[in-house]
Length: 526
Image 1 (cartoon, one colour):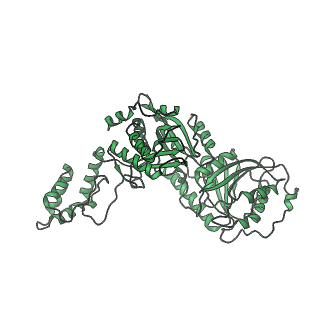
Image 2 (tube, rainbow, N blue to C red):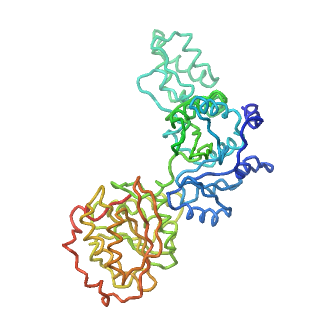
């Protein structure tokens, strides 16, 4: 493999040189420390928030991609573990090469042929080293979506022995004694274990039955596991190529690009293609003329880190973090989520901004139960890691428009308001939004209080805010993509007006607001 990688680093004189300066950082090596470019996908609209976090926690400048939802930053391999601690990123990958202005050919055939030729000319060496280092940093999770764990098949004689997926083959039902012996002689320890088991078996047992009994012997299984651990280099690496393409001027589809580029990668490395149980995921990201080739460093999105009990529409933890950074929590702040659902926002805040105190509430019993279960899950996980289990968070069941809170007692209100799509309705939002904004204004501190509210029902929200002009002032809006919906995160400032002395306090809705029952009329989480 090393000779192949060295050959990959040599650039063909006819190959287009990458125009991005950051791609050159992949070739900078100082001793055992390598400087590479890390790419990260982030919630669309919060790219600048993610860039601020990278600067704050890692100390490097970040470049925001022209393709929304991606950032890039340089890092040395001795700090690789720090990228997994970022709270604002969904997925991570190491950049193999990137092109700012890649000139795709006019015809599909020429373009796909060029992608095939490109695979053997890319500088894979440093990216592969980072991938190997990344595997040692991560805790092995066994069999997973892209894992290299072992899957046991029940209806096969040979599958009772743990065998790596790359070497696993079903044995014929009628195996001869010679074939059986050959299988067992793969390691000396297994042979000795097998011989002892055969001496205890009846002489008239057939070869197949003997093999079955030997396989079920615990000692043989343990011997086989030790043999596999002793020779990991014999395992064939499995991979897949994923193409993410955006733009209307391409003559090829994402599937065609992934198929042809993946075939060339397979031929170059002699890896085995596997779409589900892969060890390496090669990424081919194409956005108009920008093309980035990378290797994934995360097995699954980091946004699922806090939630074990999901609701119908649970908000991503990475999006929650972006909303929290927008309101800049301070020590001793009282932060309220009056429509908490599964508790994604207050949980993220209690973990990352733990100098504040969080109150999570909902009018739906099942939502409150999910929040409590998620809190317990985090506390249990912290105990297992030896960390203090306590979290500055409490959970309450309440009526959204009649909160059991003292007037002017809350510093920050942050919540995901009902969209009126999957749950509830836009019609009922016209009554709900003004009522809940008024109640939020009552409990929020005048002059200093803030609110960060997420909603996709922009028309209804704008109308409600215009009728609350004496109590709330809109400071900033971040447009985000939530489950394919174009939504807005609104940062509001509580005015200095005293509650009860403005025209908005006597505003009467067009009808009663239903905040009881199954909660579908007042809460929707994304």
